[in-house]
Amino acid sequence: MEAPKSTLSAEAKEWYPPNYTPQAMPVYTPDPAPYRPQRFSVQDRLRQAQDQNPYNFDNMSYSLEEAENMDLRENIGNLITVMCEITFDPGKFDTLCGPLVDSFATMLHERSYTRPLIDAIINQSIGEPNFRYNGARLCSMYDSVASPEESTFRACLLERCSAEENKIISGIETSEENMRGFAMFLAEIYTQLEDSQGGRIRSLGEGLCKVLLHLLDTDNETNIKSVCQLLKLPIPFLTIS
Image (cartoon, rainbow, N blue to C red; front, side, top):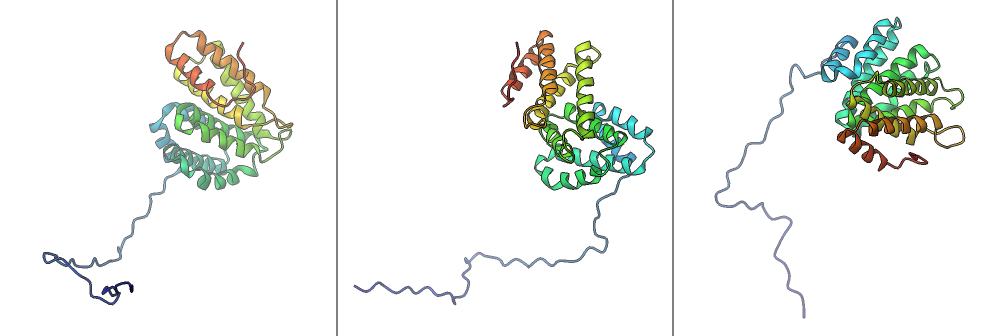
């Protein structure tokens, strides 16, 4: 039996329902004054970042005021802008952070450049939960510029982490929110940085244990919940006794 032939045709005119009213096609008119994003000075970007989170950038702003190198001021200003953007849209990390690392790479052997960079990343990571994972990733990228034995960035990072740990243990740091934020960031750093043999950095693990025990000793329910949350992370070889 022969299959019936269709009467449909690709050449047929378009069909419209009886009550259809044709719409006029939109006409594009070029804007004589197209919109351009507003450019901000380094000082303006610092001020904007401080308005968003005053804790994050107090120390870093002081470092910038002391710095005489304008390239450093400009690079830190760019860092602030990128970190704020990644905080609200973490998916932009891969796109934005490559050029950011390149802008500092040739100067990472100088402590005067490296310390403000680390201050900015750590302060942002402490204050912004949505940035901590990417903050650790950013540190890992900067750390990979030189070998572990020759990395000024790693030396300055470990110094800053040790100083932050000592502030917590000694009671200088009184904000429990900052303590929890640093503990979470320290855990991320511990999982992402490796020593010269491909293992974990022992001093970071020891510091993390001390901070966690301090949080447990505060007898604060929120702190205890944070420790439990942190211990769910895939932290290798970390034990608390």
